[in-house]
Length: 341
Image (cartoon, rainbow, N blue to C red; front, side):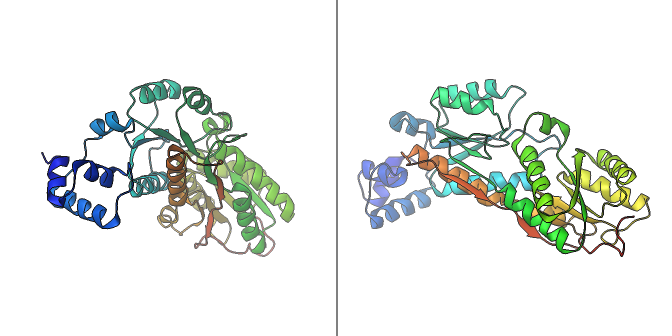
């Protein structure tokens, strides 16, 4: 196995200089650093993280705590993780994806107690999230992709739900629709006060009021079957709804099937939007759905950079909101003359 001494000899520098060039523990002249990095690459040198951690008291490993969604990790979820991993790698760190168990605090206690991670990046943040109190009390540096109800001085990067809802409702109203419904996230997420579920519902309701649209919510399907039933119930109670925003990809598939069973068509009889789904996911539907695409990669990168800045001493809290991007597909159109079904 290639050692650091081998790298130093190849680059014709002292071992301490080679270590500093590769680990960033002290400044090294750019030309020298490039020579050391080239020698390490030529020799296939890989640093021993545990040994380096013993010397510097830092492992340069970050943990991304990402509770596995009920339907498993999809494209949208993985864009958050890959963005965070890319940013961490660019700054000389490694990212460990850690899906949580049923007891997130016990998982955290085990993970941080091993001493193998320098900091924690929290995903799927609740409005009242017990993990933040545990990490603060334990003195473990952390940042959030998402935010609690009162984040205080915690670093976070999150979706701007207010701007996202205004954008979605303006799109629907601009097409001439007068009544909009929202299918929120499944009840498990909502009753746990999961941040995106709560904020999206509140902001869509507010944006609809501002635009003067009639608005219906309270439906929270979490599967294709539930989505189909929810659409049937929606039309039975509100036959004049002509636009629907759905926050669960599987529920959207059920809606599309139920629309066909009713003898209706998208977008002629219903404008259908996905909320917080990747444009790549929207392209898999027929018709291609209009989506409010989350800035997943950007938020992942921001969260990782904020955490690393905090590990390096940081300054005041960094807190960023980034809106979703409206990607218009083939599922948006003005309502039929007279509206409703």
